[in-house]
Image (cartoon, rainbow, N blue to C red; front, side):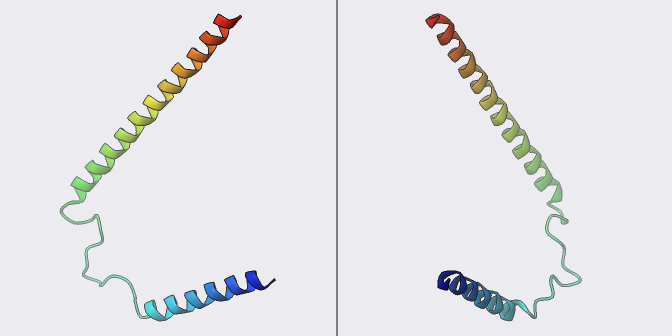
Length: 81
């Protein structure tokens, strides 16, 4: 019973400390440019698209390997019968 109470007290204290640190932070200034909305927004979009394509290629490669492994297992089982 003491451990959950201690963990909760610690987390509550951490929340109060973080609140005290960031309570005056009202977000970005009115004239500030949000991230991704400046001159380099097109470059970042291209990088994201490239990363998505690379991830899809890796997933397709893994799927092919799994299919090949499954067929290899089927071939082994057929050879044993």
